[in-house]
Length: 245
Image (cartoon, rainbow, N blue to C red; front, side):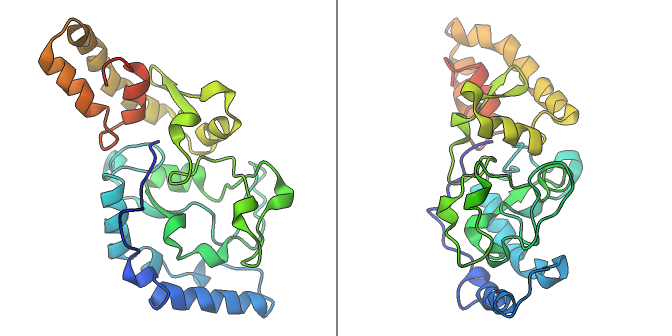
């Protein structure tokens, strides 16, 4: 994972207050005020939050990489617009109990949307959203989200490097970070397929690193470049070659 910066872009018009997303949000809030709690997937429009303008902007900000695994279209599969805080309902753990309502009022909130590959989004992260203190959970638009301390690293508001590090190709919680540990588990950051891909990427770098340390300029420039956050597995690279990036 790498920190994602949305501060330099404008919210897509479709998600604005006067756009379709703003109108749909008002309708969802009205439904809640009228007693609806059992929100379903069909209550939300993927044509709005998954609009091509939204997806294209997220892809640009994220350098075409999944917000969790840092891959670009793994297995050739197009990714999804992921809701960090789940819209229909949430799960605290693997008990498969879906608690409703979810964060219905954030379904079209740009800060809650990221580009994620299908494996991370549909096979791992799904509706998981555990908190350090469940008594501070926001159950509706009337509650204060700032009181929540999520145990999954937020790609925009957290710095993943404070919570996750790599030893070779394996992701580890940094300084025993509980948020790092939970993120690695629930986002599947040590999925066997993903770890194998990271290892394939890492092996040639391990061969090249001694040349860079001996002063080979071309090798040095290569490491400095691939350590930048726009490149694949950049956090793994920075963790394994801190002296070269």
